[in-house]
Structures are given as C-alpha cells and as structure tokens.
Length: 64
Image (tube, rainbow, N blue to C red; front, side):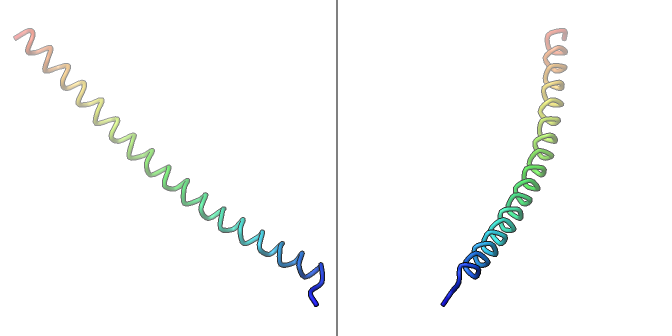
C-alpha cells in the first residue's frame, strides 16, 4: 500500500524536475534573446550607415 508520505515525496520530486526543466528552457530563451538583440543592433547600425550615405548622395546630387 502506498502511503501519503510516498505520494507527497513523488509529487515533490515531480515538481523539482518540472522546475529544473522550466529553468533550463528559460535560460535557453534568454540566450536566444541576447543573440537576436546583438544581431538587431548590428543590422540597425548598417541601416543607419546606409541612410547617412543616401543622404550624402542626395545632397551631392542636388548640389551637383
């Protein structure tokens, strides 16, 4: 016969395992987010550089 203490122990163990899985998933998501933010920052820098270059070209075209 299974006692209530054994059931509580199994539920507690299941809870700990679930929390460990969740924590691992959260860490993976955070790492992915950091990678995407870094990539987005590089792309935004390229966009800003291209806008500046386009503005210079349009300025030179209007004066030339």
